[in-house]
Length: 137
Image (cartoon, rainbow, N blue to C red):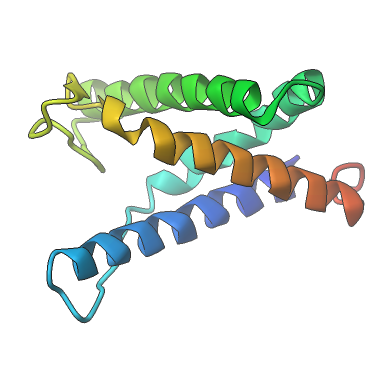
């Protein structure tokens, strides 16, 4: 489980850097500078627990599965963001400026993003299964 936690964490970090670089380009930064926080590694690593969910809902449509992942990611983002903000006093992300924000911790307009991320993690889970990384830690 430890190796997969790191794989999911690093995958999430890479996706976030690409996401931020893409939006930098949209906002006129031709350098496409992407960034993230190392605090995000363990948060994205928690996607390892989506494997259990994936195994249980594999038979559902992609819309249903993506919806479940989106809700779980929102929940994880809200709880982890709240713990970081209100217990440690740090904010690796702050959505306060968005009209779609809930307490600055999640953005409801990110629903399609988290839907896609959930499906991508599902595909990663399948690939890890193929290379037998699930049973060999």
